Length: 324
Ligand SMILES: Nc1ncnc2c1ncn2[C@@H]1O[C@H](COP(=O)(O)OP(=O)(O)OP(=O)(O)O)[C@@H](O)[C@H]1O
Ligand SMILES: [Mg+2]
Image (tube, rainbow, N blue to C red; front, top):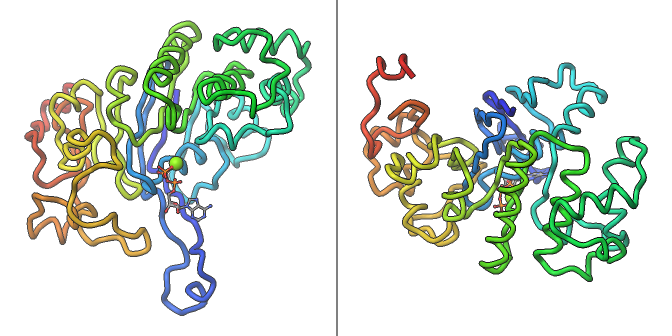
């Protein structure tokens, strides 16, 4: 359903003086070659600390951020010359739940307007009240919410409205950016249950973006762990929870959430990426080799890849990969 191949996204460096200085970098590479695959009906959790490029990846998939290199395919379609028309067709297949839904919901619009806006934007004629009622019902809210404004919604209700809006055009892939951030634990659970039942009913594929590895265990099929805009480990969720191969993944699993990771040092700046393995400055297991040589993503089991010179799980024999 979603196929990302070697995706590179760059932003110009913010500092104009920097940009004019000869030899100074003109851009920062926020995504440095990410490849991902989300099969139809499956859920992939994209995990990483703040600033690792998670939102940027979601935005690039949805065509909201330009791609420097690599490719994105949604439902078998690639934005050829990225003509507006091609993108529009692809965007209809993607439902977006933005990070911080309160900020994403226009405070001057009623719930009815908010969740039917995608039809208006795409020029699709509908019976608005009827369609809005149907969408609200899908996310477990009564029609009495149609005339409410965002400030009259609780955090959980706002999230449901954001889900209803994302589902409006009957997408096949839903990208949910930190869908449970800021919610009470019980409300988080309700929302994840809702996403799960919608997936079963509508056959959706999900890309769930979060810094909270703990919530992914029961709601994802696959995981991709990102550090400084590169994947360090990816594979089936159960395998990674059972035998995490990368020291970074292990640190994330040991902490309640990424914000509580106990690792030495600070996240390096994207403007000065470390040489060799970019994680070596914080890695408790770093060897001299790690400072010099970047490890490629290699299989430790079929579909379970890790970028580390000293993975906690032995690399799979090449013959095993061939049979995968
Ligand atoms: N429009 C932009 N222009 C320049 N730099 C940007 C822009 N958007 C994001 N960045 C930078 O790209 C990097 C990745 O940002 P991104 O928002 O993708 O991270 P994230 O993983 O979603 O973080 P968070 O968990 O805080 O949401 C950050 O260093 C950020 O400052
Ligand atoms: Mg983000």
